[in-house]
Length: 238
Image (tube, rainbow, N blue to C red; front, top):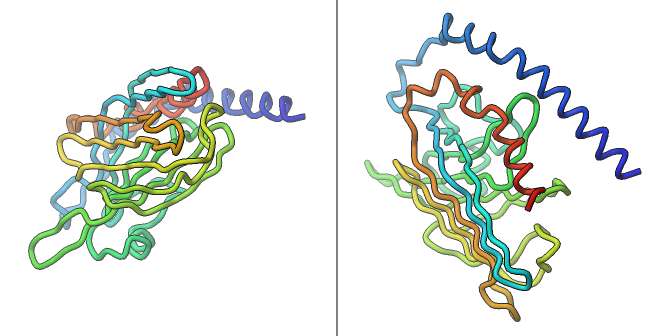
């Protein structure tokens, strides 16, 4: 029964993605001919695009490592015209993190009807006078293929949290996650290592990315075309 459900889900996703992919060039052409008006009330880009690499290294009990290319979007949730669905709003993130400043969301937007987001991060800033600093981060972690999601707050400089959910058949629920993230600028870095009571530091996951040209902003759909599908493929393959 579960196999039939999985097969039907795969076929449905494939059909939807194919149909929307065929329409994508026409939507892109229409958007280029009739671009949306830019708001004059906000000087910074409400969305930034990043391109980089995710690297996984599992040292024990079965040694395995791999890396794959990824593309992410960084949304200013207070000003982005269309924030991704199924995520916290800026106000909700501020309440969770207990901060008072801007909130940025790093995530992989849905593409042609499909979403796959192992990790999304909210960067929550505090404002004091004319300065602002990254105070807290909120991690949204979703496991594959179960689709379970957990949310937790951490100190971006470095923090240790109890392992919140099952993410791999080779890893039990014992141990902690050591996690850190820099304030996103031209470069961004997120690193998670698993500290196990018996196996020690046996797993590390790293995201490194660079901001890309703002000229790609008008073609976000093309920039992220099949990105969630590729992430799912790499996860299942490895």
